[in-house]
Structures are given as C-alpha cells and as structure tokens.
Length: 342
Image (cartoon, rainbow, N blue to C red; front, side):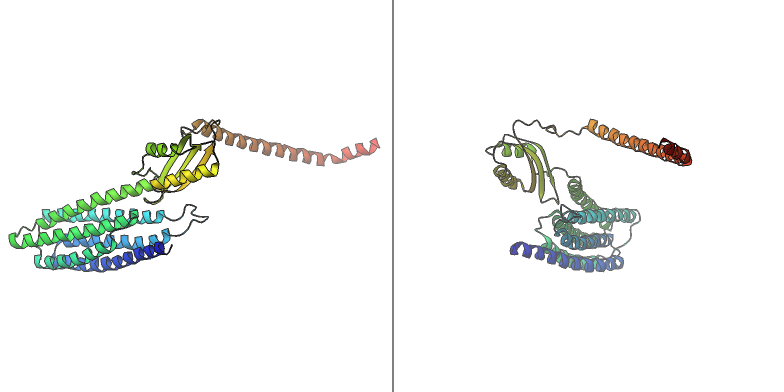
C-alpha cells in the first residue's frame, strides 16, 4: 500500500516538474521564434504550449482520478485521466493545423531566418525537452503514456530545428525551415490521432485490444466446474484497468466458482468482474447478447397504455365530480324523499 502511494506521489511530482519546464520554455520559444523569424521554433512553441496544458491537465486530473467511487461516479474517477489525454490531443491537432497553415505561407513567400538564434534555441530545447522526457517516461496509464509521447515529440522536434539551422547556415536553403515544420506537424498529427483513437476506444467501451474473447472464454471454461461462459463483456475504465461481466454455468459451489474465475481474470488484467451464475437446467434468454427490439416496443406500448389509463382515469374523475355537483343541486329533493321513507 505504501509503495503504491509513493508511486502515485512520484508520478504527480514528475508531472508538476514537467509542466513548469514546458510552460516556461514555451514562452521563451514564442519570443525566440519572433526574434529569429523561424517558423520551426514558433511551431514548436505552439506544440510545447499544448504539451504544457496537457501536462497541467494530467497533473490535475491524475489527482482526481485517484478518488474512490461514490454515489455520483459509481465506477470511480479513473476516466478523468483519459479525458485529459483526449483534451491534450485535441489541442495538439489544432496547434498542428495552425503550424501547417503558417508553414505553407512561408513556402509561398519565403522570409530569411536567424539560423544562429535557431542553433541556440535548438540546444536549449534539446536540454529542456530531453529532461522533461526523462522525467515523464515510463508511465503505465493512457494519460502518462500520452504525456511521455508528447515529450518525445518535442525532443525530436528540436533535433529537426538543430539540423535545419546547420543546413541553412551552410547552404542558405531557407525553405528547409517550413518544410521541417510541415514534417513535424504531420508527425504530431499522426501520433496524436493514434492516442485520440485509444481515448475514443475507452470512452466507447471497446474491447481492449490485448484481450481475445475467444481465448478468455476458453481459459474460463477450462476451470474445474465451469460448464459454459456466455454473455461475456469486457471493457476498460482507463486503458489500463479492465472490467468484465458474464454468465457462468456451473452446478458447483457459487463462492468457489466465482473465486476461481476472478483469479483467472487477473491474468487478462481484469480487476473487476460481475458474474451471474446459472445451473445447467436454466435456459438463458440472453445467451446470444442480442437486443430485443420486440421488448422495447412492448415497453413503449406499455407506456402508452399507462397514458390511456391516465386519461381515462381523469375522464372518470371529471364525470364523478360532475355527478356530485348534480347531486348537490338536487340534494334537497333527495333528502325529502329519504325523510318520507321514514
């Protein structure tokens, strides 16, 4: 427990340090890009600023994702870390689009660049982003992996800036700067889209790609006492911790069977499972996991019947009130009749 707590604190400390480094350096890059006239430096400044926001969100939402389940979020807050990845990837895609726009303008209308300034910023950028990558690498969650990937992209970006500055200094080929910017932007878009698709897979509760349902079912059916497994659903909460629900057919003791199944599920990184036990004599209507449209229609008709009954009840109530008023208007005659009977 103490080791796990230390690991979480270490992760958050790394994210905080990386956030401060990237935010500070991105501001310096904006200034440097303007002074040197380099689109590559300006583009990397946009990229680094996006990474700084991403790391800031990662730090905040990583803390939030540690919260235990409650009445509002019954599965916990783990997906807040995935939300941070989704937002940061979106920022990177927008920033890369702007970089492509400016790089194309630079190709159409070339402008001279200060390659000496580019060299200085490239060296500083390699040191800062190299340190940030070293600090953030090795994460296991989708959020941490995305952050580490962004730091690696920054590092490679400054390698390109350094190469561009050297080539421009000795050849005067100033178009290399926007060309390298385009290459970097496309590289960022490619990797950001990959991470973005992974986030979508988690939010859409797609089966984790490292789990084969057929193999999982085979392993579970190999457990002594398990006759069949169906209605099997597997999804991930944060790209790391997997959940599962299933129907298991067995005539043995329920506690023993569930314990054996959950132990086997750990081999597939499934840490939370809901298991419905059935005996061999039961006929499961949901064995094929099909959505029963007929039942949905029946429910709708059932709702309409409630509405008709409600309208009918209101009508009868109105008639009852009307009859009561009629009785009140003629109640005197009825009362006299009653007295005569006495």
